[in-house]
Every structure is written in structure tokens, then in C-alpha cells.
Length: 127
Ligand SMILES: Cc1cc2nc3c(=O)[nH]c(=O)nc-3n(C[C@H](O)[C@H](O)[C@H](O)COP(=O)(O)OP(=O)(O)OC[C@H]3O[C@@H](n4cnc5c(N)ncnc54)[C@H](O)[C@@H]3O)c2cc1C
Image (cartoon, rainbow, N blue to C red):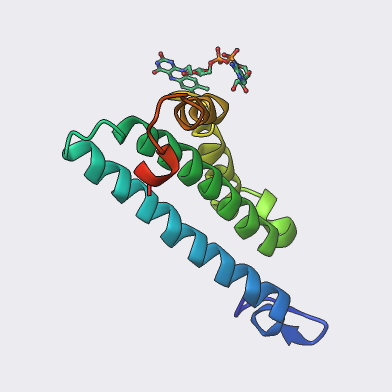
């Protein structure tokens, strides 16, 4: 963004793209936090660890793909060429929404838990 100019301005001066960068950075931090939270629940051997892990897997891989996709968009046409690594990052991150249990199945795990009809308030439990 500091290198490429369009309309006689650096890309980095366009606020729409600045906001995109801000969202990407924020989402990456949130995804890392989700993964670390799930890992801590797993290390502690808590019964809710499975649900936390399903949430973290789905969230982090969806965000990972989204961030790569936005990064490719910022690179414009160059993003689709092999001159830059973005096209590979996009393909590599996409597969993680499928492998090790698809993200639909992660949602199945979470929703099953939330809809269990015992006396536990699961929304409270997973905070
Ligand atoms: C690069 C790569 C590497 C892999 N490596 C391994 C490996 O090392 N070991 C291994 O065992 N496997 C491996 N796999 C397989 C991978 O785990 C499966 O592809 C994955 O679990 C999805 O299964 P499937 O392809 O049979 O899709 P399917 O189960 O046929 O699902 C197709 C689509 O339907 C959706 N779907 C299915 N059931 C439901 C449902 N109940 N509710 C909502 N949506 C549903 C899925 O989410 C998906 O979007 C690999 C796959 C890839 C692409």
C-alpha cells in the first residue's frame, strides 16, 4: 500500500483500505485469542474444551481465509499472480475450513451443546 499509487495517491492514503487493514489486524488478534482460550481449556481438561476447540477452529480458519482474501484484494491483479505469495496463502488457508472437521461440523458441535435440554445454562458456562 505504501508502494502502489492510483489516482495520484498512495494506496495507503485511501481510508477505505486503511479500515480494511484495521479490520484484518483486529480479526487476527481475536482469532489468536480464541485459539489460546481453547488451548487453555484443553490443557485444564475442562469438559467444555470440545466446544471451545470447535469454536476456535471454525472462527480462526474462517478469519484466516478472510484476511488472506482481503490481502489479495489489496494487491489488485498482482495478488492473483505468482509474483507475490498471496494466491498461495489463499489456497492454503482455504483448505483449513475443510480439513480436520469442516466448519459446518464445528457449528454442529457448538449448536448441539447450546441446545442440550438439561438444566445447565450453556451460554453462561462457555463465557
Ligand atoms: C488437502 C487435504 C488434506 C487432507 N488430509 C487428510 C488426512 O491427512 N487424513 C484424513 O483422514 N483426511 C484428510 N483429508 C480429508 C478431510 O478431513 C475431509 O475432506 C473433511 O473431513 C471433509 O470430509 P469430506 O471431504 O468427505 O466432505 P463431506 O463430508 O462430503 O462434506 C461435504 C460438504 O457437506 C457439509 N456437510 C456434511 N455433513 C454436514 C452436516 N451434517 N451438516 C452440515 N453440513 C454438512 C460439509 O461441511 C462440506 O461442506 C484431507 C482433505 C484435504 C482437502
